[in-house]
Amino acid sequence: MREEKLSELKQEDRQRQERVNFADAFNRRVWQPDERPRAASRIVGVSVAVTLVAVGALGIGVMRSYNDKSAAEEKAKAAALRRREAPSSTSTPPGHAPLPYTPLSPGGGGRGGAGPALLTDPRPQDGKGAPAPAPASGGQAGRTSGPGTAPRSEPRIRAAQGSGGRNAYTPIQAESYGQQSGLVREATSDSGGGQNIGAAANGDWALYRGVDFGSTATTQFYARAASGAADGVSGLVEVRLGSRSNSPIGSFAIAGTGGWQSWRTIPANISGVTGVHDVYLTFTSDQSASFVNVNWFDFGH
Image 1 (spheres, one colour):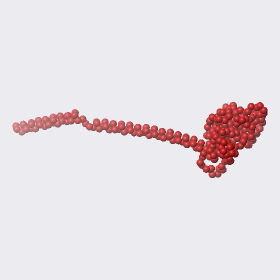
Image 2 (tube, helix red, strand yellow):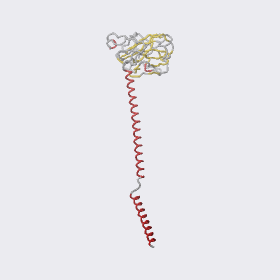
Image 3 (cartoon, helix red, strand yellow):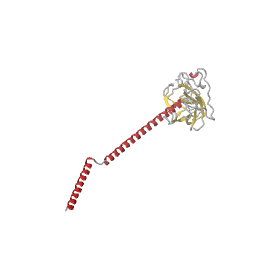
């Protein structure tokens, strides 16, 4: 009997202890929730923050790269412009003889004797820098002369740009090219106004299509040119027919004339030409700097 009573007491103790343990476990779960969900949320938050930082850094890097590229392009453009306008410090390439360069007479061109000797246009001048009209020759109309005759005007080319049909003996405006490389158009202060082509440097060129020389051979080339090139910078203005790779039929050398709008009419001899041709003006120099502007050109007998 005593043993049964002890067994019942032990069983009641176990049951009471189990109830206490259950209550403790319940209380811990209610008042002290599991830390694992909180750790997971922290991990997610850290991941989002890292992602935002990485995206921001990438955006800053892209913007900085774009700004650096834009700055580099601007510097390159400025450097190219300086190279075109500044005198070259490079020496004459091997195998290239320097271009002719002789001083002007004192006071010539306003440079106090510096620069090349420029040829004088043999044609009479009209007092405004443009050649006076020459007598008709070789069946070419519109080139009359004599007392009371008005000076030859310098109109725009009547033919559409690049359409051909140009009169070789009427001033061809230099900016009316069909194609070009390396040249710019700018307003001119020369008589007649309008525009000229400028910043011509070694390797530049302009094409004038369908220039009609007629049936009488042309032997003269005249160009209205100006140069503000620095001392020691000079070049050649060349005339080629049909292709830039063909040999020049004539050329003249030019250096500083006293300014980029200080105009001279410069003549040159050319080999006899008849018929209709595409005319190229090409520019050659031993230096890389710009050396000449051209307002207009034409031909004569």
